[in-house]
Length: 359
Image (cartoon, rainbow, N blue to C red; front, top):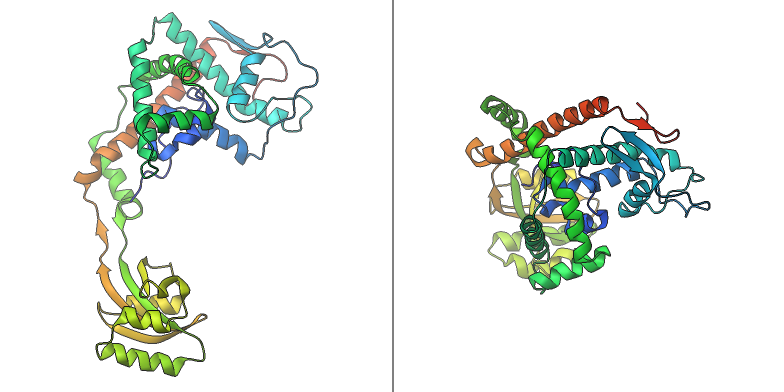
């Protein structure tokens, strides 16, 4: 089963610089580097709040206008607009009814980005082209994995993803050059933080049922008869009990077009996936037993359970590394968030009126 349920983002603000559209193309479930997801999380939080792209600004102000300053850096109006455009929000307009809400979403993230950049510059944290190339190659691998089954080569799939995202490879490389120093700051600040063995075991016990247990499923096939065909259902059931071919009889008699051509096969189903009467019959049957006719709103069903897959729980040894990674990510996120908050206080962040986010 798939877990964790949410992407393991570190700090959504600092790691929101990557172009949002390209993040969507790559699909969050395929990107293993936590910081790569977080612009998507930031954008989603804006969308969930009910905000939409604003109309173009009528009276354009200078992009160099400082909307926030702090010891060691600043945030300009141009950077705010650029961030909004990269996030798919369009150009921000003060006349828009969503303007204040959008600014409240964007400004904390940009301030965090610029503080991390300033710290990286002050500490001499840089990025080599080899590191950029390595990131590009990892992204190519991830895109190629996503494109499996589409008859696309690795390079072709990557080029297509760039085209769909509306950016060039050089633009992506430049964003990585800007992103990696920030990632390195986080690794320096919070890289040693992680869970204890006791915390890993506690997480496993608390989430065993929800995340690490596969419920019982039953592989089932059926023949559906109309509501006025109960007698015919009884007849076919008898034929089956006498050795009749289930698949052939399903193709001949079943009124369920979705499964009839598949010999009545419904696949493997779990509890809560079908109507109550059908579920009760399926989970009360023995493997290979013919049951029915079972009445539902659809008609009468003659059912056979072909396989029973018992509930199974992954042992801690199989998932410990995943749990440790998840808890490490969460702990580092908290540590980095606390560090950023302290940096904001120490660097005395000041906002232009209208750009200060709510406390």
